[in-house]
Amino acid sequence: MRLAMIGLGKMGANMAQRLLNGGHQLVAYDLNETAIQAAEAAGATGARTLDEVATILSGPRVAWVMVPSGNPTEATINAVADLFSPGDTIIDGGNSNYKDSVRRAAALKERGINFVDVGTSGGVWGLAEGYSMMVGGDEQAVERLRPILETLAPAADQGWGRVGPAGSGHFVKMIHNGIEYGMMQAYAEGFEIMKAKKEFGLSLHQIAEIWRYGSVVRSWLLDLTANALAADEELSTIKAWVPDSGEGRWTVFEAVDLDVAAPVITMALQRRLRSRDEAPFSDKLLSAMRNQFGGHAVKKEA
Image (cartoon, one colour):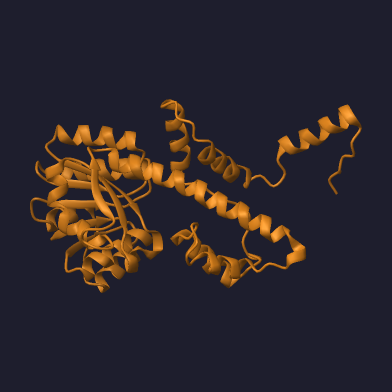
């Protein structure tokens, strides 16, 4: 099957390579000329403009968009839609807000263009291991993409599926990432407690390796944690500053809108936000209040 990969960042480039390895014909486009040349060296047909992408592809055309969420995705999808025809398909494989995907699908449907949202997980390991893909869109449109999805997945019948109409793929991926926040926070807190128990001289890497086999808390995330601890058990070169992609926030907002309690995911998000402040004002104020009502000592800045 022939399709275009629009956006050749690390994940897009890896997905393109997996598709090429699977025998698909690929048209590669990116704003970065070096990225296009790398895709050409791997066997793709390079395109320098979106017009060229549309010209090279034969109908019904398929374009997989892998660019940052928000304005870059909006602009790219609109530009591709202006070049596509009824019966063509645009796939958004990025981390878009599901509400945007619902809106885009409705707008493209009026033009006869199929829109499929694919919540994609797998990160830098996807090229070798395959990607987990949560797919939203018209059933027939998704079925036409089956050869692509089966190639990108860990196996033809594993790790992917149509979960519902347009928007549902990105919705499920949003919840997936919210759960990921909570799991990561639990691991981080547990290992920190063990690190603080100095008198036992615990090896965090050894414990991670023990837990990887037979334990109820074993997971791929724990495997990756063990890898990080094997490289540097003190994590001496890493700053305690944790960004978020936005999907954890969206998950918390959705929980509030649906009157669903999600304290673990919410607290995990709050901890990420807290990690970015080296001297939280709230902690300073807490110290000041203790001093005011109890005369407790206050540590001064050097």
